[in-house]
Every structure is written in structure tokens, then in C-alpha cells.
Length: 248
Image (cartoon, rainbow, N blue to C red):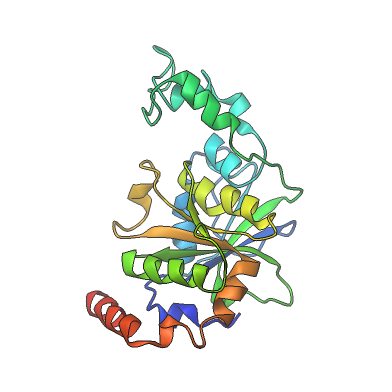
């Protein structure tokens, strides 16, 4: 698939497509069934040029299954997800992550998640320039970007749209921010981009200066078509782009 934003933004990492499929791609990276792993390790591999595939059996953890839109795996979490996200349950259970102050507040936040079980077997992370649009249907596009590039993506996401909230931040795990939450946006008449990768547990699996910026494919196409005549052709962006080039 051809697109311009990687070059214009001087992206260090490839934007990657998130594809829902019932066919497993050949020679793709995949966790072993039943083994622990972090979805973000796979998304980072895709940003570096590899294709990765995940399923309900190879999603790595309970949160990964939820984040990949494979249903509510939290009902099976030992000791309760509410306690794991907050204070912990005590001896014999996993230590609490202390990301949320109380189990009660954690329960409220989990209940607010747009958990969905998609009717597909696989989630594929694939570098966008390796996607065949005639054979593969892209659901979402995820960028790994630094602050200067996030700034440009945010401005471009608002360029031809009314309102001030065309890019949103939602609380959740790293995998929630690149798949489940953007998928929720894709169901809206006017979808929004999701800025993410604020999950402290996921941060070690991405470069220190990188956040994720994920958009429904329809929005990605709009952003690509909005490049001509936009700020990306003006002097202010050229100055910022030169700085990006110097620190690569």
C-alpha cells in the first residue's frame, strides 16, 4: 500500500495496519499457545517491519485478549482484575499494580471499557507498506511517533474536521489504546484518533520517546488526502522536520 505520511513526517518506524482475519499469515511472529507475552512486543515488531499475528489462544495475557477485541477475559482473572489493577488481593495472588487507587474505582473503570468479541480468529499487525489493499481489509492504522510527529498527526487529524476533540486520550493498557479503543471509534460516524501507550507496564517495550497514534482506516485515508495544501507544505513544518532529521 502506498502512502505519503511516513516520508513527510520522517517517521523512524513504519505505520502498521491492524487487520482482522480468519486466515493466518505465513511466517508471521506469534506467541506460543498458553505462554505469557505482551501484545506491545508484537506491535513494536510490526513497527520495525515484521508481520505478527495473535489469536485468543496466543494473545499473551488476559488484558491482551481484551485489548485485541477477543471478548471479556477479565472474568477469568485470578483474584479479580479489580484488585490486580489496584491494591492487590493479598497472599497467594499477584501483587497489585497500583494504577488505580481502590478496587471499587477499578471496577468502575473496567465496567466502562468498550469490551467486544469480534467474529474473527486472528488479529494481524502488518507494516502498512506491505499490505495488499485488494486482498487485505485494514481496520486500523497505528503510528509509533515522537512528540514532533505526534504534533503533526494531531494537527492533521483536526485539519478538515469540526470540533476540538478529534484526537482523544483514554485510560487503558497499551494494547487497549492501539486496538480496542480505536475500534470503538471506528464504529462512530465521525471517528477520532486515539493517542496512547501510556501504560507503564508496556512502556519498556517501546522506545523512550515514542507514543502510539492510532486511527480507523477511513480516518487515515482522509488524513492522507488532506496533505496537499496543508501545513505540511509550509515553512513551520519544514523547520520541525529538519529537527527530526538531525536526531534520527
